[in-house]
Image 1 (cartoon, rainbow, N blue to C red):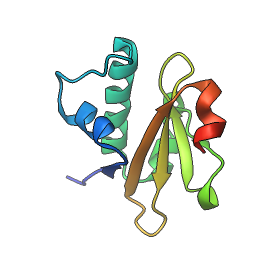
Image 2: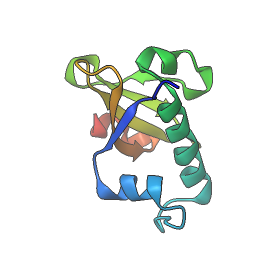
Image 3: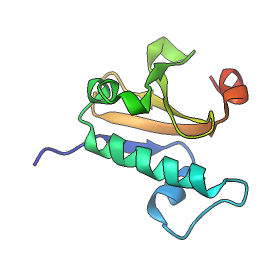
Image 4: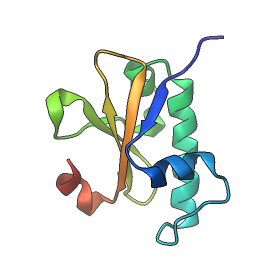
Length: 108
């Protein structure tokens, strides 16, 4: 069986949300937490960025940032999950932040 992408978390809260089923930050709605965890499963299942592009429901988009390595995928209610891809390691992605549609430009 081929392994999926290696996920690196930019902060402890995102990592903990990924590994601790009981953890839910008070400021996040349950549907956002659920969507985040579902999208992580898609990242784990993908081999590389091209696999993610093939999944229309992720709506993978390039964001302003470093050499086109910063992208985002759709969560719920206009929120997006910011990701940074490592071009030297095509199977590695850093989970950067969850942002609402009004915060996207500030985060990039």
